Length: 471
Image 1 (cartoon, rainbow, N blue to C red):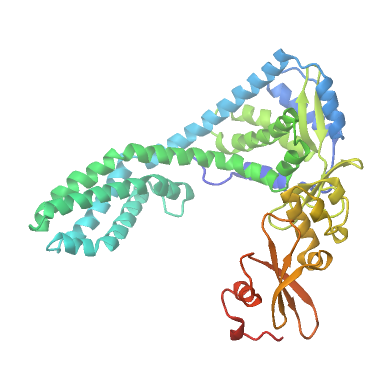
Image 2: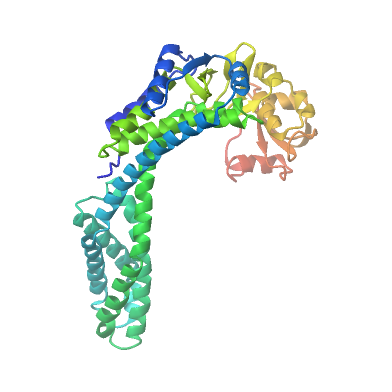
C-alpha cells in the first residue's frame, strides 16, 4: 500500500538536511571521501581518488582542465539511470496497486448507487421538472457527499486520508459532475410536462450510471496520476528542505552566466538526495530496496559533511564544498546580508544578495545605511533600482533628491520625485506627526493628484474627515 506520509527513515533524511547550519558549515573531508567511495562501489564502478576543493574557481578550473573519459562518464550515467529507473518502477507499482484498490468495481458501484438513491429521493415528490430544479443544488451536494462516503467505505478509507481524499477530488468528482449534468438533461426531457416520476428511473439509470461508467477511464487516469504525484511528494519534500535553506538560490547565483556545466553538476547533488528519499520511502517492498539505498544514501552523508557539487573525471572525483550562506529567518529563507557577501567561499570569492536578489559588489559590500539616493540616478537596471529604493527608504530619498510638493492637506503632503528612477512616476504621501515632528513617507499611485485623495487611498477609501488625524 502506498504510504501517504513520510516513513521514519525518509523523515530522518529531511531532518538531517534541515539541521545543516549553512551559515557555519562543518566540513569533514573524510566523510565526503567515504560517501563517494560507497556510492561508486554500490554502482559496481571502481573507486576513484576524491579531490576536495574549498574554492569555486579552483574546483572549476581543475574540472575544466581535466580530461573527461566519455566511456567512464557513460558508465556512471548508465548505472545511475538503471538504479533510478528501477526505483521509480517500484514506487510506481506501489502507486498503481493503491489506485487499483480505490478504483475497484465495488467502490464505483457503491458510489453510483448512493448518488442514485439521493437523486431519486429528491425527485420522488416533484410534480414537474421545475420542482426538481428548485431543490437541485441541495440534492447535488447531498448526492456528491453520499457517493464519496460510499466509495470510501467500500475500500475502508476515510475522507481524512490525504491520498484517497485527493483521488476523489481529482478524479471521481469530475466524473460525478459530468454524469449528474447528463442525468439532469435526460430527466428534464423525460418529464417534458408529463408525470416526472414516470420517466425518472429510466432517465437516471440510462444517463447517470452510463455517464459515470463512460468517464471512469478519466477518473482512473486522474487518480493514478495523483498516486504517482504522491510518490514524488517525498522527493519534493527533500528538495524543499534543501531549497528552503537556500541551496538552490546559491547554486543559481554562483553558477549564473555561461557556467551551465557547473550549474548542472550542482543540480545532480539535489537529484541524488531526491532519489535517496524516494528509495527509502516508496520502495520498501521491492527486492532491490537495499541496493537503491546503498546507491543514494551516501549523498545524504556527503551533504551533511559539506558537499556542494562534484565532477567525475577519468581518474578522480572533484568535489566543491559548501560556501558560507547567510540566510534570512523570515519564513522565505532568502539569501541576504547587509554589507557583506551572502554566499562566500573565501575572502575574495563571494556573492551579494539583498532579500533574495543578487546585487553587484559595489552595492553589496556597502552597508545599506550608507547607500546614496544619487545611485538611483545612475543605475540603469530597474530591478537594482528597486533594491536600492528598498534599502535607502523613501524618507531619505525625499530629502536627498528634493521631491516637489504637488498638494498639501493639514499635516499631509503629496510629493513627486522628479528624477526618473522607476518604471512609473513616484508619488509619495508625507505625513508629519504634530506632537513629535516624526516624518513618515508612503508611496501612492501616480494617478493621485491631491493629498486628500492619497490619504483616502492609504486608508481604504475612508475620507480623512471621518477619522482623527491628530494623535
